[in-house]
Amino acid sequence: MLILTKSIMAMMIGFISAVLLGLILLPILRRLHANQTISKWLEREHKAKQGTPTMGGLIFIIPSVLVMMILVFTGKAKFNYTLGIILFTFIGYFLIGFIDDFLIIKRHNNKGLTKTQKFTMQVIVAIIFFYLFMKGENEPLLWIHFLHFKMNIGWLYGVFILFVLVASSNAVNLTDGLDGLAGGLSVIAFLTFGIISWNTDWLLGYADISIFAFLLTGSLLGFLIFNTNKAKVFMGDTGSLCLGATLGAYAIMTRHELLLIVIGIVFVIETLSCMIQIFVFKLTGKRVFPMTPIHHSFEKKGMREADIVKMFWTIGLVASMLALVYGVWL
Image 1: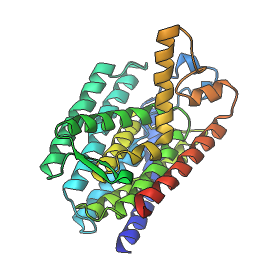
Image 2: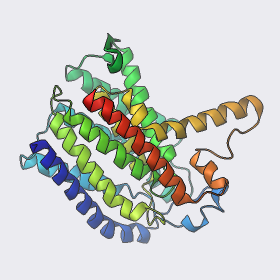
Image 3: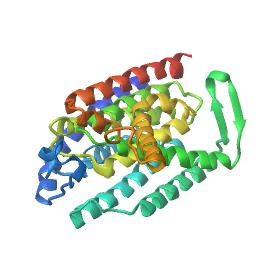
């Protein structure tokens, strides 16, 4: 009950802090002309978005980290290796995204970090994650809970961690193409992992990573006030990369890696649509979808942006509810 109370309070504090920071930060981003350039392929659909500031991820990142540190220093939460790994992932991928967005703004085009530079930085953070994970005396076990199956895969688990972190960070990044889409889905996902963390009482620091998940959920809800249709600010790579990687980190630390596929089903669908499109186009020269990620295909077919977002939010919510049934009660 104490964990629940702290988690709810953290979510409320995160929400209020993000709203207040958004009111302060938004005019600053506008004055700095921190605008995102709209893709030429979406000039008709997203013409009204031209000039909207990016780097809005700062609105939920700064409160989440600062409030968590205040909770630690005041004794309301404990800093341990589990929380440390989660925060390291969150901040590490935030810095990658921040550098990418900063370069885009500075150059006044969509050319930030190259794909090789971004991937290399993502891999480096993932390797450090694996090192810290093993230093915490965790076993490199691949768990398939519903089969009651565990297998020690040794160093291959490092490759698995690399895949989970890089793939999940890029998946959320791909999904961040409509107002409120990635932010709303992340609220659902982190709320789900926050609840699952309550049930992971064998893990050192499970209560503290649960509190951080709820804190981040609240901060994201505050950010959505500025990001839902019509968005006043975009989260940018600053926000999307760290959200995706941190979801992956929660899945790994709670040993629910495969459950991440269910909780993040929309992120998976968006990513698969891009992969299928590229593969088929290179093979046949034809497109499977009008445009990818797949949310843009619905736009091209005339569906309202707000309706697309609501549809994907609903899918994410239903999938996460199913994941909770398995992750908590089964």
